[in-house]
Amino acid sequence: MAEVREEFVEIAGARVSVMRAGQGEPLLFLHGAGGRTWSPLHDRLAERFEVIAPEHPGFGRCELPEWMASMADLALYYLDFLEALDLRGVHLAGHSLGGWLAGEIAIRNTSRLASVSLLAPAGIAAPEEPFGDIFLWSHEQGTRAQFYDQALAEKRLAIPPNLDLVLQNKTATARLAWSPRLCNLQLPYWLHRIDKPTLLLWGRQDRVIPYACEAYWKKDLRHSVSRVIEECGHGLHNEKPDAASQHMIAFIEGAKA
Image (cartoon, rainbow, N blue to C red):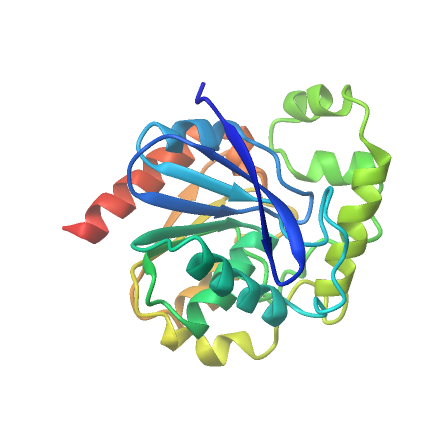
């Protein structure tokens, strides 16, 4: 396992935790609605890159800032984050809500980016297969929806949740993605602005952000490739970290060729 270092940075009045591990080209990994954890996928990626995993403002231990009213606000925050840490040639990656956020960042400015990896991103809905309603699901329902292999869900459910963190993360997610639920109806109109190689990576059996959404992302991205992991649910970073890291590393290496 990678040796993980934690530091704190303050940008736009928000003091947030940033985890780092590994060496090499910077890979900024943006977490989903459930909050920031250091996953097996982070460990795999840290063997090749310097993985930088911040906790979004308003999530976890960070108070919800007054300025954060939309995903657009959070995207602008991360552009300031990249500038403040002077990160260049960044491989931007995000899962679920974090994948949507990565897309929102990239439509605004890609000057510090080398590639974009979107892992089961929210942000664009498939009308024929609506998102799961994460705001109504119980803890058990939400956990089970993360996994194709329910034995893994059982292991996760055996760990008591930190209810304070769960409530904080749900509050922050509701601020960003309550209505329209988990999507930005304008986003498809601006995906053509992403001028860096982009990976779309999904678990075939995703019950949170269905694989059907992939087609609606891909048709408006100019420089994208798609990959799918079989027998895998939404939490591909925990359920199939080896397959996910192999796809991501192969994509990034190919994008540089």
